[in-house]
Image 1 (tube, rainbow, N blue to C red):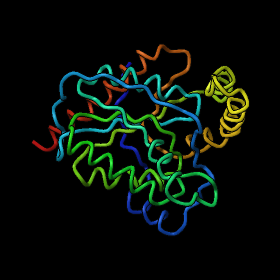
Image 2: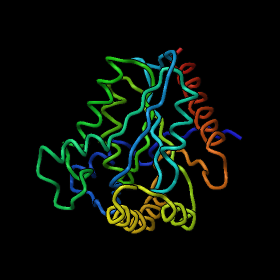
Image 3: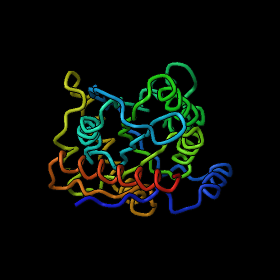
Image 4: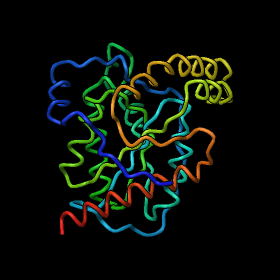
Length: 242
């Protein structure tokens, strides 16, 4: 059964942005090393919802929640969609600027700026929806990224995959992230396992998007629910603007 989409913050945007400006805690920010993203094919553009003519479907969730798998299925249901992996921006910055004090590139203000700027540029030059599987569990950081995108006329639809911590640990333990380097693979696995509790807690504490269960369900069903909820939100927005 499809769920009606909630907008992605229960905290008013100005309050979230003010928190960011005054040094919000970054303890809940999580970033996965060694992850990758597949290419998702598209055919034709979907109708524009506003402004630059596109939408962003941001699929949030803890590591092991199945973001990339579900994002692939979502893309197949959105003609003209493009993959957008903000981790690639972080990897680029790793070769250009000094790392943050925490070692997490999400803590770099330039990363948040570049993620939103690139999303806007992709819509301006290519159109169509962007599908983004990315863990960001600090509300202030997500606001820094999403607010400029929405101000540029691109709708941001954010969903959070809901998976129990026990299932997350089972999935992470079974995943192979670096098949050619067993030591690196184990390092990544330990890091991801260490993030489970704080990511689950942050996602439970903050309203970071429309929750969608991804435990014991085929990814096709999860993707269909996300697309249905997003379409309902777009239809309501179009009627409100009419």
